[in-house]
Amino acid sequence: MDGVPCLRVSQRHAQYFRKCLQSKGVLDHSLCFLKEPEGTVLLPISQSCLSHIDLLSLRASDSCCELVWSQQVKKERRRVTANKLEQILQQLLEAHGEEMTEELRRDIPHNFQRHGDLVLLGDSCFSLPPWKKLDQQLWAAVAKGLEAKRLARMSRISRDGFRSPVVTMLLGGNSWVKHVDNGIRYEFDVTKSMFSAGNITEKLRVAAFDCRGETVVDLYAGIGYFTLPYLVHAGATHVHACEWNPDAVTALQKNLVANGVLDRCTVHQGDNRQVQLCDVADRVNLGLIPSSEEGWPVACRLLNKTTGGVLHIHQNVTSSLLNPAAIGDDTQRVSGKEADREAWQAWANDTAKHISTLLQEITAAQWRTNIQHIERVKSYAPRVHHIVLDLECRPS
Ligand SMILES: C[S@@+](CC[C@H](N)C(=O)[O-])C[C@H]1O[C@@H](n2cnc3c(N)ncnc32)[C@H](O)[C@@H]1O
View 1: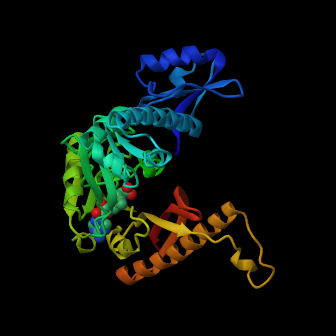
View 2 (view 1 turned 90 degrees about the vertical axis):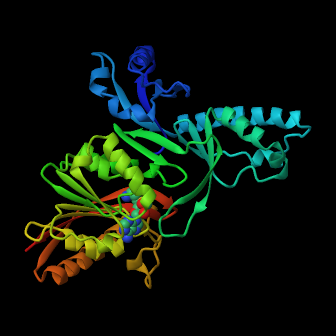
View 3 (view 1 turned 135 degrees about the vertical axis):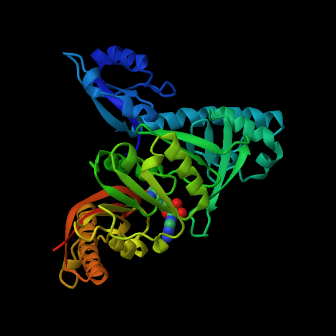
């Protein structure tokens, strides 16, 4: 879900809802209310409090409200923050006998990640020489402008196979941050692990599964993005969490303790292809993109041989705007959404066949696979979508 979570209410009831949200401590005071042309008002809600909001209890007899995700409020927040940061930096430059030029203005960051009181900047900002002269004063000013206490900078994703970000602290010593997401506490070291904020819809979907009585294997556990919702909300009896990055394992273990679920999780540190488990899983989560294909044989080996189970297979799928059925004929353009859906379905069909073959090879028995659902998680680039295939696999 993109944007800022807001409660949409009628103008007439805006004050009533504002007071309700305020008394529950869930109103996001860093953002402005937004009046919509239709006579409704958007009241921004702190993302970390989303799970505490009970819409039914908020609704009074003659009023109603709905939860929406607003891009406009997000843009407004960005604009207000950008203006404040620019003003502070302009004053700092002037104090050092420099002027704010258009070039310097373009070198101020407009996108960044917020992790509590720590702001993580990208690497395409503050690259010009005048900033360098300001030294530590620059970071103190940026932190003030962004209302942060700590600052860090991300350079690039390293190519060491661990998908670790190269993050360096600019201001503040402690690089551990905390997130509360859907009632789950995640802690990690920003200089060692990444938080995949874009997976929020998938984490909420997993949280809503009913996994009571099930053994789940999370093949790419990271700091527990899916392992924790399986344990905390979906009620899995046991989760085997595989992860080869020692820094992620440290955070994962901390998070299992913080959420009180350590006793229901076994962490397998190392390459999941070497894991000494088989015939145990009712469900296997394969949360690796662009593709988890290397993990498919492992997942098939892990599935319970007698009852089978469900695989949740993540993949980035690229669609073409040309309808392949029409090529060679009158090449016909299909709508983007239609082309995407066709590409996802084609990939899901191929994957289902591939998994059936693998299962047959591994168990020497016949299996049926059934595409239960295809979930779109997020768009990576035009025509590239991160999707999840829920594939039910049962021995025939
Ligand atoms: C991008 S993270 C995904 C975390 C989480 N599933 C998500 O989607 O947000 C992938 C994780 O898988 C781990 N990983 C990749 N290949 C692995 C392998 N063969 N065995 C164990 N862990 C692996 C990486 O270290 C990383 O922490």
